[in-house]
Amino acid sequence: MANAHIAPSPMQQPHQEYPEKVYGHPQMPPQQRSASSQFRQAVAIPNLGMSPAPVDCPACGQRSMTNVSYHTGNTTHVWAGVACCLTGLLCFVPYLMNSLKDVQHRCGSCGVLLATWHKSGVVEVHMHG
Image (cartoon, rainbow, N blue to C red):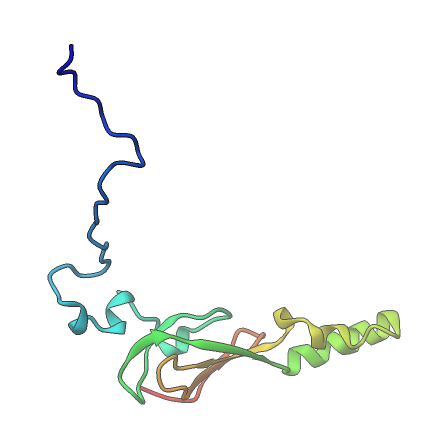
């Protein structure tokens, strides 16, 4: 029993280094992975909606997630008119709500304006592929 093996306490265990996990394509070296490989499918520019989406930019040729910004449009003005008629005082509320505004999509790589999604459901394409 004098030869019984006693496991070292956690404080005495030697430090082990674990390899870092690499996500993406394991067969490609990290320097050759492109940003476009993270999005398998791109949305056609005329099909853009209210939220960001991956697109193939016709200006720079990169596939990236669009950056969206919200802007006052005709629908915002209509809702402000309705609010003014119903309440008299709350006509400013639609201008504070992004859900009632038009959405502009810009390329996530080069920043060019690609399209504007109007709250009416119409997509105004600014940059064609």
